[in-house]
Image (cartoon, rainbow, N blue to C red; front, side):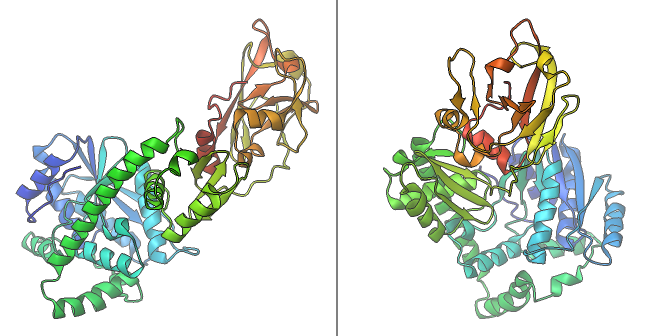
Length: 465
């Protein structure tokens, strides 16, 4: 997407930038209260009369600093005279777990904002050229590849909407001059001076040394970032062409035999693009090599898997399946159900709606003990129109349902007899005819790794029995 970057921090060039963006119903300004985001807020509120879109700001209170509530008040007081509505979102970033505090706070912040950003809406953040150079160096030190060294894009897909960074070409000094010339008042977060944080160390200790030795280093570094970005765009174009030859009719499933026709380099390029386009974290080159050697090259009947933080790739038959990590699941749990209320399960919801035909016979469910269980092994079912019972295992194989999903599909038992495999089959003895009252069962997996795997595997989403 071609976007004209702001070439000077003023309202004219900022308005020109906004005109190059896709059609938008609402701009959402990420407003921390700091200098950078205050400049962005002031710029867009100044040009707002020229445009028809809605403008709002969002402030995420992480509740880490003791002054966080005062900062939220400052943001409200700043937005009020600008006639900009402000939404304050509270998150608890005090317990980062294994993540660094900064990464954890960023994940919570963007995750919270993503939930309130709709289609045809754009989030604007005040990242500038100094931020971009710091990101480049941090990723360089961590051994990032081409995509990582492209640093931050000017615009990207973000949830249902987009995320744009209009000031990415401007040094912080330009933003500071604008803020001072316009008499802006902003918050100084004391944590920005803490050099125990990697980004702050680069900002306060590394960059001054580099700039002292090479005063004009910002321009060539910015050029290097653009070269990496262009290179990544070319790699993506190649990957899209190769991916189309390996794709199946189902999202996030690739045909292994077609993928293996490509060179190893192209295989890795396709895998990187496939994973990145799915919104999952892309692993390093060594992990991708294991995907090729341990999963793609596994035996045809093997259920091979390679996992990394945030994602996993599995093989079933001739296909690669990509998904978020599978959560732990206890398939020994039995859930009583009376059909009157939805049955809430660990990974989804079962509902029963009265109808006629194509469901469970209501007459057989009266005063019966209904339970939701999971596969234990050896189950059989009699399908309508067939003379003999079939093992569920065989039916799963015929339907091409991956083995790692099978233990998570709900089985509905009536008086200890298997009546329905949710979303798939109903035993002929329990199936209502067109003229009989029925319970129409619907299985709705939750928005979890299981939900995505259900979609990828091709299990029918309606859950009609």
